[in-house]
Amino acid sequence: MAPVKKKPANGPAPDVKENRRGNREKFVIPIGVRVGGRPLTAGCTLNVGEGGALLICSEDLPIGTAMQVTNLRSAEFFTCRVVRRAGFHESGRFGLGVEILNPDRETADAMDSVADAVARKKKKPR
Image 1 (cartoon, one colour):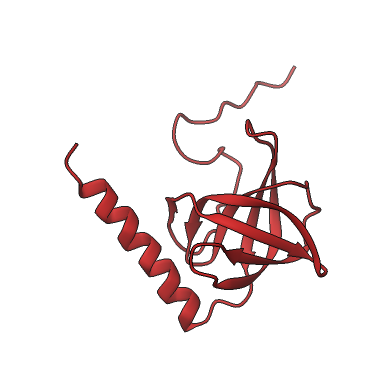
Image 2: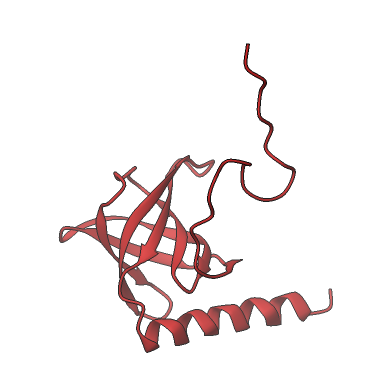
């Protein structure tokens, strides 16, 4: 019998290559999602970063699916592609890891503003 590989307490599983290009921050943003022009039930982000995000969506989409994601707070939209299916979430929806396909200056500025907001939130005394 082969030994069971245990996931470390923090970080990725031992045999998993990390493909992220930047840091991610926990940040919940309401989003709208369209796939091939078909709107899905609105969802939210769980974390965001310069090149991608973890979304909660009404459908479990296949890896490689292109989608348009709209930030419902700022009305900015991004073209994304599913790179990881994170499974069923406690909210009753599905977690999807997405890569932002159109990371331009506006996208970088938007992600910087999210990171700034997270940093301000962490600094607030409670």
